[in-house]
Length: 94
Image (cartoon, rainbow, N blue to C red; front, side, top):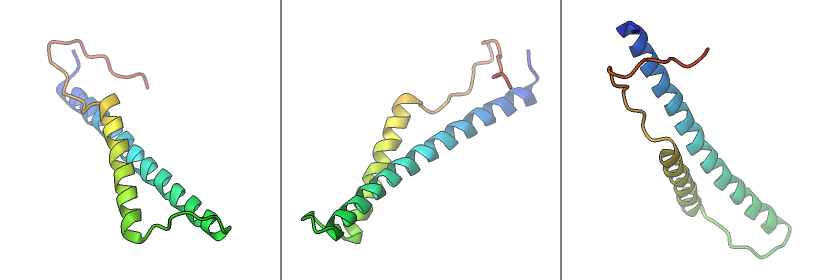
């Protein structure tokens, strides 16, 4: 059985990895929406008739894309729960 400090370290590490993945997912979703905005601006510059987004609309698009990515991540990787003390401890390989 591992010592309590080792188990606590492992639990904190798992949570940090989960937070890191969550942050990366939200940033990726917002960046993809930003890319779509750049695409609209480029098309407008080329003379193609596309709707123009103002800053408020762009903010809503970025927020909704980030939230959509957040919910997709939470669906695939729910918040990690502390491991039960009755289960054997198997740290991830280094």
